[in-house]
Length: 421
Ligand code: HAM
Image (cartoon, rainbow, N blue to C red; front, side, top):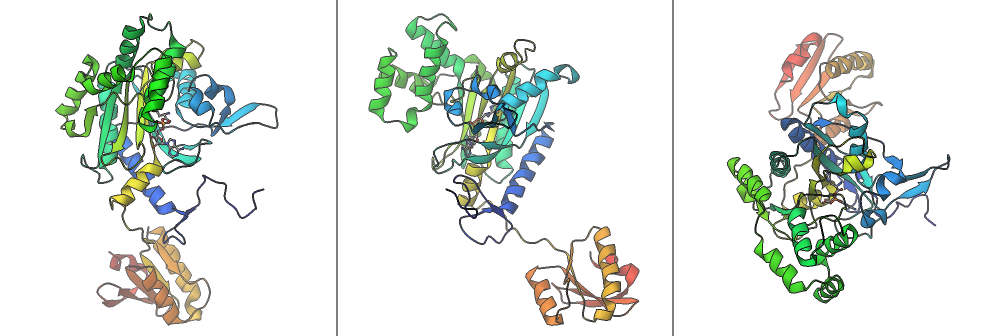
């Protein structure tokens, strides 16, 4: 039984800085990350959307693949509906766009920052809840869209001060793997989908599985480790990947990408180009992952809407670990501008008026809600690192102290804002 004071394993508490304990997460760092995500999405012309955190179980069970289905946080609600917390955003996005596809000009470029829930085995970089920046493009088949999306992914990581020395996008293609699979097995395209997906799953887990185990699993499907290894080593880009690489080169982003057929992605719905972002030193799990999923909207809409699509998801957990490790997080101060010090309680009402006026003018203002000694109030102002301390001297005048230069001026009430530059 979990006690009332216990937090569920794999879930996080977010506290304001300074953090009281190493076991909690920073609400300030989270906001910092969200702000950057939103800012870069805006620069690329992506619009924000959101959906419900609980969806019908069916939305996730048929489209995403066994791995994610095994991690669902699902239950029966009080209306006897089979529902699940969302483990990812993509099926919701597909449902939403299919419902109102005609109202939007193509290509649709949308982003969201959902909180997602997966009942995973807890490990470094993997929790049971995380926030994920999702950016997706719908209604564009050409690989220009893949390049645009990858450029957004690169710029998002760069916006945190990371460079090509810190991370790399490993670019791959399910088409290339499909060709490989079909050539070796002689299966017609799409004829052997379940076995093909089983094969993809082995490749997806390749790096995290013992070589002997990989060989056994491959042999059961009629492949040898050697031929799979050779195909990965050859790394010959498909025409589509060549195009994307050239497009990224034209933007000066070539150092951030490399073709790597080791990447294939675990989710079942991907159909073409796929990619993952990793730190260069290989210390952390994937920072982000995505690709094309041209059939998902059609599948989810029961054939009514057919829209090609692609996108990626970037989690906040690995990103934060990486930013910490590379010293890329700023200091999170209180950001208060002014402390209004109330020395004489007969001036409290006039001070409240002053506080109100300053806040209306956009200043962040703090003060002592209850009577307190002046030196205690001043100490609090210092702790908050405010730029100015203001105190009413009379009904008409205030004294303003610049905390950095220690200069003081006396000003009329209506004039205070002018001295707070
Ligand atoms: P995903 O690879 O399952 O893709 O997740 C994307 C990223 O979310 C991962 O690279 C990782 O940073 C983060 N992430 C995933 N699971 C966890 C976890 N349990 N704890 C912490 N972080 C996690 C998707 O979800 C796709 N729906 C992305 C996408 C969008 N594809 C197309 N559009």
